[in-house]
Every structure is written in C-alpha cells, then in structure tokens.
View (cartoon, rainbow, N blue to C red):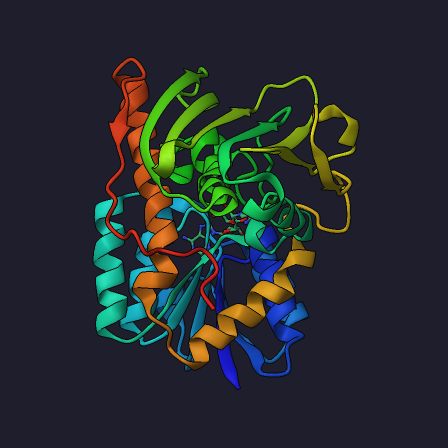
Length: 343
Ligand SMILES: NC(=O)c1ccc[n+]([C@@H]2O[C@H](COP(=O)([O-])OP(=O)(O)OC[C@H]3O[C@@H](n4cnc5c(N)ncnc54)[C@H](O)[C@@H]3O)[C@@H](O)[C@H]2O)c1
C-alpha cells in the first residue's frame, strides 16, 4: 500500500486525492493546507487522514507526496518531501528555476526517489489520438506544431484562499507563459518527437506586471519549428493544436469548435466544460497508475523529470528573449535522450 500525502488541497489537490483514494494500492494518509475551510473539507473527504495546516507538522509516514500548491512553492515542497524520504508527484510547472530543478533532481537521484511531473495532457485521449494521427507513417516527419490557447481570463483559484493568485507573480511565478506555456512546451516536443533548441518570445504585460499574452516561437531538432500563442484576454475560449508533417496535417481542438481548425484531419474534440473540468480529473487515473508504477520500481528520476527541466529552461529562455527584443535564446540540450512517457 502506497501512503500518499497531499500538499495543497485546492481544486487540483482535491481531485488528485479523490483519484488516489479510489486506487486499490494507495491510501491518502495526510493532507496539508493553510486554509481552514479546505482542511475541513479534507477531513470530511478523508476521515482517516492526518490533516494539518503546514506540511512541516505532518507526522504520518508518507511514501508519495503530491504537491498541488501554486507554483512558487513547488521547489520548497519537493525538497522537503525528498528529505522526508518520500517520492514526489508535482503539479506543473514543477520547477521555475532550472538551476534549482537540476539540484532537486540530483537530490532525488541520490535518494533513489522519483519526481513525477504533472504533465497530464500526455494522458488526454484527444491528444493521444492526435499523436497517433501525426505519426510519421501518416503525415511524414512532423515539421511544424501550432498551438493556440485562448482564454477570456486566468482560471480562478478556490474562493477561500486567493482566487486571483494566477495574477500575482510572487505566487504564480509568472503569467500565462508559466500557467499554460508549461503544458505547451512538453506537448510540442512530444507531438513532433523532437527537442526544443532555441526560443524567441514576445510578451504583453498587464497592469499587474503579469504576462497576459505571449507568442512563443520554437526551433526544434531536424529543422522543425513551432508557434505557441497564449491569450488570457481573448473574446472567447479556444484550444487548438495542429501538427504539419511532410505529407499532411493533423489537428485537434479541446473545445466546442472542431470546424475552427483549418485543414487536415481532426483527431477529435472534447467539450470545453466537459467531465474533465479544471483539474482534468478524468485524465488522472491513468497518470496516477503510471506514478504508482514508477514509485514501485523507483524509476530513474533523471529520465522522468527531464521534461519538467526542459519546461523550466524554455520558459526562462522565453522571458529572457522577450526582455531582449525577441532575440533567439538557446535551450540547454542537457539530455538528448529525454522521453515524455517513459515505459
Ligand atoms: N495540470 C493541470 O491541468 C492543472 C490544472 C489546474 C491547476 N494546476 C496546477 O495545480 C496547482 C494548484 O492549482 P489549483 O488550481 O488547484 O489552485 P487552487 O487555488 O484551487 O488551490 C490552491 C491551494 O493551495 C493551498 N495553499 C496555498 N499555499 C499553500 C502552502 N504554502 N502550503 C500548502 N497549501 C497551500 C491553498 O489553501 C489552496 O487550497 C498549480 O501548480 C497549478 O498550476 C494544474
């Protein structure tokens, strides 16, 4: 039985806890959250768990910590959990600072513990269908990826804590580039099976000093390119992915407008407000099974966490590029062997 602690019982933490509590080989033994209403809820949902204000108060023996707090605290809780001897699953973005990320991976490696990134879009059926459709056998080698994420505003956090935390750089660690960009970076590499080498970025900042619009241009190995456009002030919601190969195009939309993707095969569409919801809970069981499998065999953390390091490096390079008038920035090709869903 894998004993699970949840750090941060917000919308994501609650959904992960429900998922693990329903698995035969896992038990939620502890929850830490500073918000009293969230602790009350956690006690109701998990009456046998130790529920505390801060993870430093935990006394339960824990095998796996699920870090579900806002991004600026991820690195602190990863380190604390590893030092306790626990394996770690961390919501995205796992690391904000690539240098610190490397240090934490070294720490995990020295202790034979995993850090599993919450890159849950890799478990989305519609995106797996897209990847199938953009395989070289179907459209030739992917040459270009285009991703558009339009939102009318940042997603609100739970009302009892700080619903606007995504607009506070100190808590969120950045704006839309950190929030949605994280998913787009690992998905780009996964969809075209090439590594990001260079980044150029344009950003628009709002009054709060948070980036609310960003255009990320990427150069990948083998001459492939990608453009990721992110907008928190769009007129309507839209999520679109397009992969252009040597002989054809594959596309997917995650909203209600499959016809809005021009050309190519449409891999599928799921409703914007479908079962998945804010935390994409219907993608969670498969990811949780993967996490437990890697915990059971203490898989190599360098392979597992490499995509999270890439996300941190690409986002750091993107902010640096935007500050330097969109100049191309190199991304450290630290691990050419990195894979996104290691078996
Ligand atoms: N992978 C995805 O699809 C996805 C979707 C949404 C959010 N997320 C990620 O999940 C994380 C949490 O987002 P959310 O939407 O659940 O936020 P939320 O606002 O719903 O919840 C945040 C929770 O963290 C708690 N908290 C704040 N500081 C804490 C601390 N120092 N220690 C312990 N708990 C603390 C708050 O009390 C609150 O309960 C973020 O990293 C976010 O990027 C991922």
